[in-house]
Image 1 (cartoon, rainbow, N blue to C red):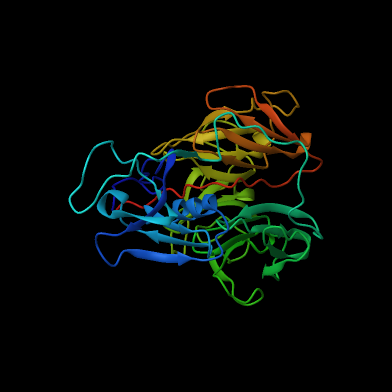
Image 2 (cartoon, rainbow, N blue to C red; image 1 turned 90 degrees about the vertical axis):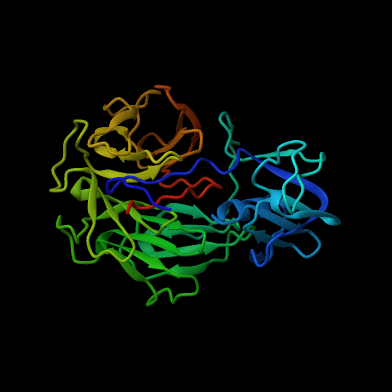
Length: 392
């Protein structure tokens, strides 16, 4: 699959499913063999099996075996195979049109129902938190993988720690020997990415790699500077499904795009020469970068007290949150980190005001979701890993 767009742009397919369709007491038998992706183990719930399928870009159907906690992922659509009576549950990511038969297969039976995705347009959050990670020193960003493991940047110790579900005290060190790391992200293959800020580089740790020696430099690493092969105190990073990394190059006032195996980055927002500014083409201390499900880029433009949205092909951004002034009103924000959900709501860490804000799509004023002292990071259990490919 390819597309012809300039460096920043991405091909973005629509959200895979607004609902997950279930067939109770059935087993999916594929029409064509082989198309089994994997038998995921230690999958404790049906919902987690659905998450696992959604997070795998090739999965369209899954069998869930609750007695052995296995989730079998398949590439075929439900409509291609057969449904046979069984004690398990079949998960399908596409609705089968009522009454239609397909060659070599059948449609889902009537006893299907919808399982809503957890990120909803008007969700609310409990004001009392649950501890999922402890014994930390200056924790910054957090990330959550499909198995609900929590990854924490333990910044002043120069490490990234992994906490398994329901175990907030004992952790596994994923990365060590870093210099004030700022941000971490984990992809569907279990690779962990870290912005090693004061070493002016971004690191990648494949699954099972040695925390102290197994890291791979995938961006920067040539000291602080503004050249194409350099970064200067990188902060937020976004990794797309093709492995391309977008970096908030903090002190260079720009967003850099590094493709897989590249030795240099390309400026996709802000000034390539590092000049700061407060107009629509410039940034001032960007701290985070995210994308929505249609390929729009969002930037936490910290010193300009705003969130900027850059459309594909754009050479300038539009302010979608904040009014450019520092303050505590509902239309003011000094963003540190953020998350954009599939409804284009923007969740922002406004740590100078000790709060998490939600800016609904098209709405100027925010809603205070949580009040937290010294909040630095934010992660939401997102299910969709959207395709982004560089044009050929």
